[in-house]
Amino acid sequence: VIREEMQVHPSLILNKADPVLIKGGLTDLPEEIAQRLDMPLLGVLPFSMAVHRSGAMDLTAANCGDKKVETETDNIARRLLGDNVPLPKYKLSFAGRRRKKL
Image 1 (cartoon, rainbow, N blue to C red):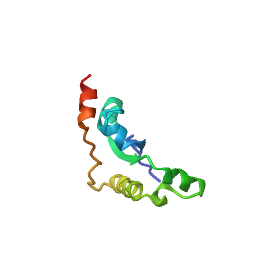
Image 2 (tube, helix red, strand yellow; image 1 turned 90 degrees about the vertical axis):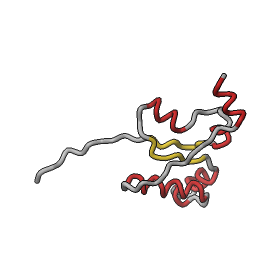
Image 3 (tube, rainbow, N blue to C red; image 1 turned 180 degrees about the horizontal axis):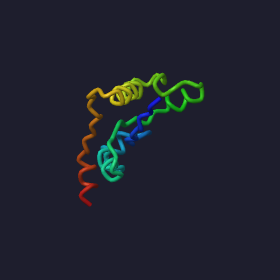
């Protein structure tokens, strides 16, 4: 049996991302975090109490009942399989742009 050496390609999945904080410039944009860590961004899971509740009921985030989380979980899986699925985009609000300039 010949084993091929598997190459590991680490990727970043941001968890509990709060769009309000991101857009307001109170946390960095996901792309900025990935760039700073020198890792490709695989996905951004939004903050959702549904994920916490589903975990308490032994369910996965993919079945938590929050459509945004479920969609992004599916998109991450598709990206892992090689599909070209766009990443979520966040635009800074006016206040967020002002904070970033400070």
